[in-house]
Image (cartoon, rainbow, N blue to C red; front, side):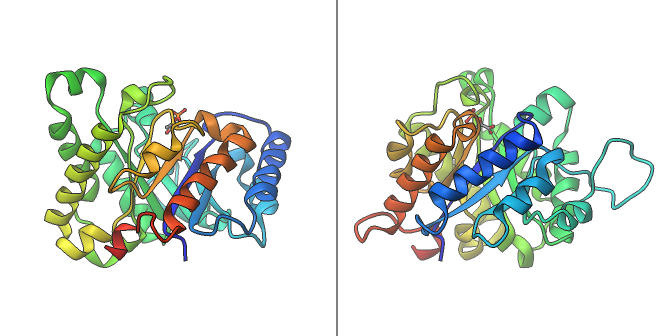
Length: 267
Ligand code: PEP
């Protein structure tokens, strides 16, 4: 039974051939080992089928990086939740800061996407996080609150076991500067309490909260040890199979050793 989650976000990188080779390499290194970690790969749309085939029969899971909330229709360039299910996805990333910042996604949009994902039995990975300016102004909690409220409005308690929240401070994404363990502990704790207020203590505690932002094999261990960190979302370092597998190993080890941490649900 996986106790933590390690997600690879390949963003807009790679041809189908490169995606196939990377997925095969990750499968070779991770395969049936490191079983305390659920491992999820999110390639670009064009490589979903290729990666699905590369992962077939393994315990590695497939995610999309985005979706549209309508089921079908005249929405040129968009992809629905049912289409992603059909393509073999079990998970979908929703509300990544690059989509919010570069493509103008609002909290309302993110909420609709999250609802569509849940409706289609896809597991949403909801990304939230503040900008550097917001953190400096002392507005981190205000930003996170708006993002969580917008996304989770109308979401019934009965489906939240499918949900993962990814805390990704915008200033840490792709910058080589990860949040400190103290910052991650404080913010994950705050998110945990917000989820408990929204869904009740037991349900709120059961939702995994993963950290994302310049995670690499060198900083994975200190992040894995932080209370309330239930895994990681990895961008840049996931494009190298050895780096990604090293991160999976760190998390799996931390979560499976007798003295290591237990997942939120076990607390
Ligand atoms: C991300 O893509 O969500 C991310 C965290 O990227 P990076 O690991 O490169 O900072």
